[in-house]
Image (cartoon, rainbow, N blue to C red):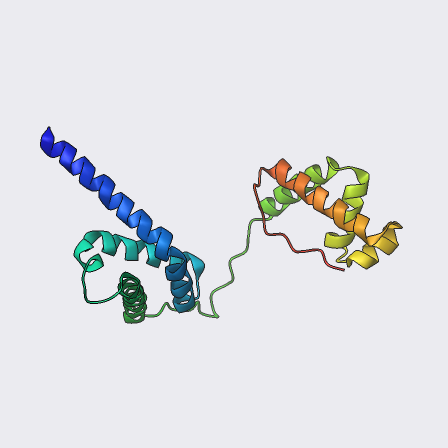
Length: 183
Protein backbone atom coordinates (compact mmCIF):
# COMPACT_ATOMS: atom_id res chain seq x y z
CA UNK A 1 0.00 0.00 0.00
CA UNK A 2 2.85 2.40 0.82
CA UNK A 3 4.47 1.57 -2.51
CA UNK A 4 1.25 2.41 -4.36
CA UNK A 5 0.95 5.80 -2.64
CA UNK A 6 4.56 6.59 -3.47
CA UNK A 7 3.88 5.79 -7.13
CA UNK A 8 0.80 8.00 -7.13
CA UNK A 9 2.77 10.87 -5.59
CA UNK A 10 5.50 10.41 -8.19
CA UNK A 11 2.94 10.40 -11.02
CA UNK A 12 1.37 13.62 -9.71
CA UNK A 13 4.80 15.23 -9.42
CA UNK A 14 5.69 14.15 -12.98
CA UNK A 15 2.41 15.51 -14.29
CA UNK A 16 2.95 18.81 -12.49
CA UNK A 17 6.49 19.07 -13.87
CA UNK A 18 5.34 18.45 -17.47
CA UNK A 19 2.46 20.88 -17.02
CA UNK A 20 4.83 23.57 -15.78
CA UNK A 21 7.16 22.86 -18.71
CA UNK A 22 4.27 23.27 -21.10
CA UNK A 23 3.09 26.48 -19.45
CA UNK A 24 6.59 27.93 -19.55
CA UNK A 25 7.82 26.70 -22.95
CA UNK A 26 4.69 25.51 -24.81
CA UNK A 27 4.12 28.62 -26.93
CA UNK A 28 7.76 28.84 -27.93
CA UNK A 29 7.90 25.15 -28.82
CA UNK A 30 4.67 25.36 -30.83
CA UNK A 31 5.84 28.43 -32.74
CA UNK A 32 9.20 26.81 -33.48
CA UNK A 33 7.66 23.49 -34.55
CA UNK A 34 5.09 25.29 -36.71
CA UNK A 35 7.87 27.21 -38.43
CA UNK A 36 9.80 23.99 -39.05
CA UNK A 37 6.87 21.89 -40.25
CA UNK A 38 4.66 24.51 -41.87
CA UNK A 39 1.66 22.69 -40.40
CA UNK A 40 -0.04 23.56 -37.10
CA UNK A 41 -1.40 20.05 -36.55
CA UNK A 42 1.96 18.41 -37.15
CA UNK A 43 3.59 21.01 -34.90
CA UNK A 44 1.20 20.15 -32.07
CA UNK A 45 2.13 16.48 -32.45
CA UNK A 46 5.82 17.41 -32.33
CA UNK A 47 5.35 19.46 -29.14
CA UNK A 48 3.47 16.59 -27.55
CA UNK A 49 6.27 14.16 -28.47
CA UNK A 50 8.82 16.64 -27.09
CA UNK A 51 7.02 16.74 -23.74
CA UNK A 52 6.75 12.94 -23.67
CA UNK A 53 10.50 12.72 -24.17
CA UNK A 54 11.02 15.26 -21.38
CA UNK A 55 8.83 13.12 -19.13
CA UNK A 56 10.84 10.00 -20.03
CA UNK A 57 14.18 11.75 -19.42
CA UNK A 58 13.69 13.91 -16.32
CA UNK A 59 17.44 13.88 -15.67
CA UNK A 60 17.95 16.05 -18.77
CA UNK A 61 15.74 18.71 -17.23
CA UNK A 62 17.88 19.15 -14.13
CA UNK A 63 21.25 18.84 -15.83
CA UNK A 64 23.77 21.60 -15.28
CA UNK A 65 24.85 21.43 -18.94
CA UNK A 66 22.44 24.00 -20.35
CA UNK A 67 19.00 25.51 -20.24
CA UNK A 68 15.82 23.46 -20.24
CA UNK A 69 14.41 25.59 -23.04
CA UNK A 70 17.43 24.91 -25.21
CA UNK A 71 17.14 21.18 -24.58
CA UNK A 72 13.43 21.24 -25.47
CA UNK A 73 14.08 23.19 -28.69
CA UNK A 74 16.81 20.72 -29.66
CA UNK A 75 14.49 17.78 -29.04
CA UNK A 76 11.79 19.49 -31.11
CA UNK A 77 14.20 20.03 -34.01
CA UNK A 78 15.36 16.41 -33.81
CA UNK A 79 11.79 15.10 -33.90
CA UNK A 80 11.00 17.20 -36.98
CA UNK A 81 14.22 16.03 -38.64
CA UNK A 82 13.43 12.38 -37.87
CA UNK A 83 9.93 12.75 -39.33
CA UNK A 84 11.33 14.34 -42.48
CA UNK A 85 13.88 11.56 -42.89
CA UNK A 86 11.23 8.87 -42.40
CA UNK A 87 9.05 10.46 -45.08
CA UNK A 88 11.91 10.73 -47.55
CA UNK A 89 12.83 7.05 -47.15
CA UNK A 90 9.35 5.92 -48.11
CA UNK A 91 8.86 5.40 -51.85
CA UNK A 92 6.82 8.11 -53.53
CA UNK A 93 3.21 7.39 -54.27
CA UNK A 94 2.40 6.49 -57.85
CA UNK A 95 0.24 9.01 -59.65
CA UNK A 96 -2.96 7.87 -61.31
CA UNK A 97 -2.39 7.06 -64.96
CA UNK A 98 -4.16 9.13 -67.58
CA UNK A 99 -5.66 5.98 -69.11
CA UNK A 100 -7.85 5.24 -66.10
CA UNK A 101 -11.17 7.07 -66.06
CA UNK A 102 -11.77 9.68 -63.41
CA UNK A 103 -13.94 8.64 -60.50
CA UNK A 104 -17.28 10.40 -60.55
CA UNK A 105 -19.32 11.18 -57.50
CA UNK A 106 -22.76 9.77 -56.97
CA UNK A 107 -25.44 12.07 -58.40
CA UNK A 108 -27.78 11.10 -55.58
CA UNK A 109 -25.44 12.73 -53.03
CA UNK A 110 -25.63 16.01 -54.94
CA UNK A 111 -29.42 15.84 -55.03
CA UNK A 112 -29.66 15.13 -51.29
CA UNK A 113 -27.22 17.94 -50.50
CA UNK A 114 -29.18 20.37 -52.68
CA UNK A 115 -32.45 19.39 -51.04
CA UNK A 116 -30.93 19.78 -47.58
CA UNK A 117 -29.58 23.24 -48.36
CA UNK A 118 -32.85 24.34 -49.96
CA UNK A 119 -34.81 23.15 -46.91
CA UNK A 120 -32.45 25.04 -44.59
CA UNK A 121 -32.72 28.19 -46.72
CA UNK A 122 -36.52 27.92 -46.63
CA UNK A 123 -36.37 28.20 -42.82
CA UNK A 124 -34.66 31.60 -43.06
CA UNK A 125 -36.53 34.87 -43.23
CA UNK A 126 -36.95 36.24 -46.77
CA UNK A 127 -34.50 39.09 -46.00
CA UNK A 128 -31.77 36.70 -44.85
CA UNK A 129 -32.39 34.31 -47.74
CA UNK A 130 -32.20 37.19 -50.27
CA UNK A 131 -28.86 38.38 -48.88
CA UNK A 132 -27.35 34.88 -49.08
CA UNK A 133 -28.70 34.43 -52.58
CA UNK A 134 -27.06 37.65 -53.74
CA UNK A 135 -23.71 37.09 -52.04
CA UNK A 136 -23.17 33.35 -52.41
CA UNK A 137 -25.25 32.22 -55.36
CA UNK A 138 -24.89 35.30 -57.55
CA UNK A 139 -21.36 36.01 -56.25
CA UNK A 140 -22.15 39.67 -55.64
CA UNK A 141 -20.04 41.93 -53.46
CA UNK A 142 -21.60 43.59 -50.43
CA UNK A 143 -22.01 46.83 -52.36
CA UNK A 144 -23.63 45.04 -55.32
CA UNK A 145 -25.96 43.10 -53.02
CA UNK A 146 -26.88 46.31 -51.20
CA UNK A 147 -27.79 48.02 -54.50
CA UNK A 148 -29.78 44.99 -55.71
CA UNK A 149 -31.71 44.70 -52.45
CA UNK A 150 -32.06 48.44 -51.82
CA UNK A 151 -30.52 48.32 -48.34
CA UNK A 152 -27.32 49.78 -46.85
CA UNK A 153 -24.11 47.69 -47.04
CA UNK A 154 -24.02 47.36 -43.25
CA UNK A 155 -27.45 45.75 -43.33
CA UNK A 156 -26.22 43.26 -45.93
CA UNK A 157 -23.27 42.35 -43.71
CA UNK A 158 -25.36 41.90 -40.56
CA UNK A 159 -28.06 39.93 -42.36
CA UNK A 160 -25.47 37.61 -43.91
CA UNK A 161 -23.88 37.13 -40.48
CA UNK A 162 -27.15 36.19 -38.81
CA UNK A 163 -28.29 34.06 -41.77
CA UNK A 164 -25.06 32.03 -41.71
CA UNK A 165 -25.34 31.65 -37.93
CA UNK A 166 -28.88 30.31 -38.37
CA UNK A 167 -27.69 27.86 -41.03
CA UNK A 168 -24.88 26.67 -38.77
CA UNK A 169 -27.40 26.03 -36.00
CA UNK A 170 -29.65 24.19 -38.45
CA UNK A 171 -26.82 21.91 -39.54
CA UNK A 172 -25.43 21.58 -36.01
CA UNK A 173 -22.08 23.15 -36.88
CA UNK A 174 -20.32 24.81 -33.92
CA UNK A 175 -17.99 26.94 -35.99
CA UNK A 176 -17.20 26.96 -39.65
CA UNK A 177 -14.76 28.76 -41.82
CA UNK A 178 -16.98 30.64 -44.17
CA UNK A 179 -15.79 33.02 -46.83
CA UNK A 180 -15.64 36.53 -45.36
CA UNK A 181 -18.07 39.00 -46.82
CA UNK A 182 -16.14 42.12 -47.75
CA UNK A 183 -17.14 45.33 -49.45
